[in-house]
Image: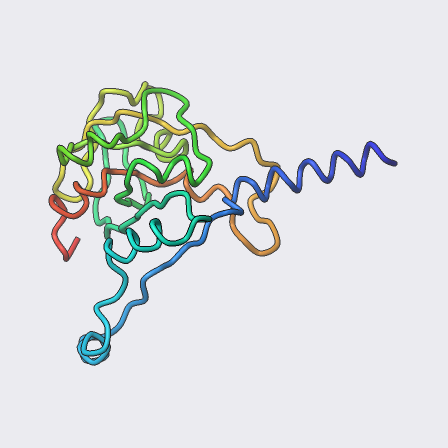
Length: 190
């Protein structure tokens, strides 16, 4: 009985760790133009200056990551197509989300500095776009932008898709691009 209890505890801790238990996630809220205009009279929202202020004054904050969703209308490679979500992230995203690379590499600080046209694929997205081929070094097209695949994430070793109502492993079907690329290469309408 003790072994079963210890095994269940280890599995629960592994699930919780995969969710990034030490992370605080702040998401933007969508407003119509009139509501947004009214709100901006009082506040411009969270900025990178606010993040810098938090990092310098709150000792328990050890880092941050940023993410920007990109409306994805078309996503394909020469080998297949996918219905994946595309997001721009900074280099810390993968570490803070407990994600690792199966092959290739992750997005780097240099990729963000140079606005590199590169992508890291979640395992399911890689399988959809490259069913019978290695994705590393190949090209994908997200909307109107061509990106070179530099990495593929590992599939998390989780026995569940959900834990206490929270979906797990959502990054398996995502395309990650440098945050700077998401801001410069994809129009606001994308």
